[in-house]
Length: 118
Image (cartoon, rainbow, N blue to C red; front, side, top):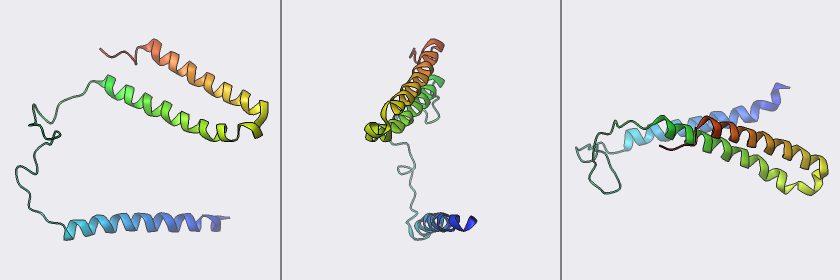
């Protein structure tokens, strides 16, 4: 039974080997003429203002994680939408329950104030 996983293992080893090889080659062959201008902060052509160690409010990270969470949930709806007719009424009920759970989660997050941007 473990013989079925050998191609996946080979693909993973080749992928990691290629990535490591490219990083190593770029490190060996790439130029290393670091100047103060090259190592400074870049802000879209505008002179940098403030420190590069500026702290972001935790709300920013919470909203970003929630966006990713709900965005990934939408990805699960695409195969369902493609196979909607073959799934029939049972498939519709299952997706309704899935969306219901998402709505409950959204309401919970909303009530906790995670979507408030002060």
